[in-house]
Length: 292
Image 1 (cartoon, one colour):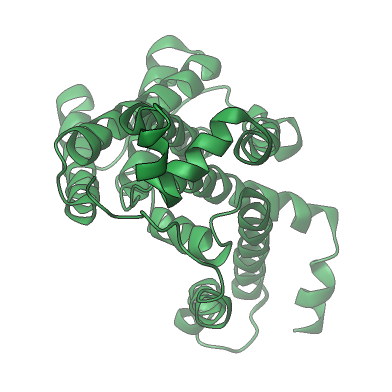
Image 2 (image 1 turned 180 degrees about the vertical axis):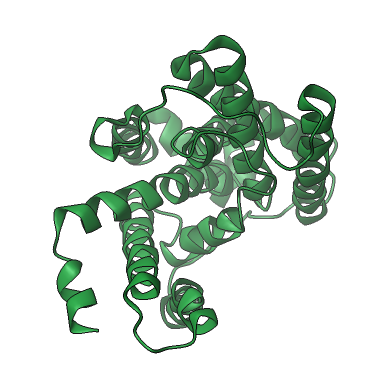
């Protein structure tokens, strides 16, 4: 066990933690934008899954990882546009909408795999996609986007409107600002971020696997809550969760004597503990979940 903990200070461990962090970070940043606008974002799981699917398929068909990354962002944005249509335009229940989008993603990605490649479990392998996290464009893109989201939310006119729409939409409407427009922008931009996170789930591993999101969207939503809907704390908590999952992987490989099922639960138990300890300290946007 001591060797496992000492290994946490190695460069290889840091690289593994960063690789794991990327999808959580991008999904959580997207969820932060969406929820600060007052829209509950339970659809993060589906956005990650569609991003992973689009990245793998487009990269396989074009041979270009850059095209696959762009497709992942577009796929996440498209799912978010459907979410905005139902939640913002039609006033549907936001929780039900998010769950429906997740269920549709699980079913439709399998169906499309069957249609495109004759198998419903995974896509054909992707060639010539590097796995070195230090040269991964997705890692550096995630870092840049984390800084950008923090600046936009905290330091720009749009960020001020975004925060106001999530807190006091009536005041925003009285000032002549379109609540729907701000929410559409936030939801679609947040979906594109989550879709980029999905690309990290397929490109470095050489293809798409059915249900590749593996609950990461729900964890990202929990991180948004623990981070009090603020980009910087959210990013730091994602990094901590990535380190916890990397430590869990090392514990499995090192043979600590603990049951493997218990070791696999470590990051999720940590999430529940943190959510219980700090989750109630941050105040949610006042208009979150309201149908205006």
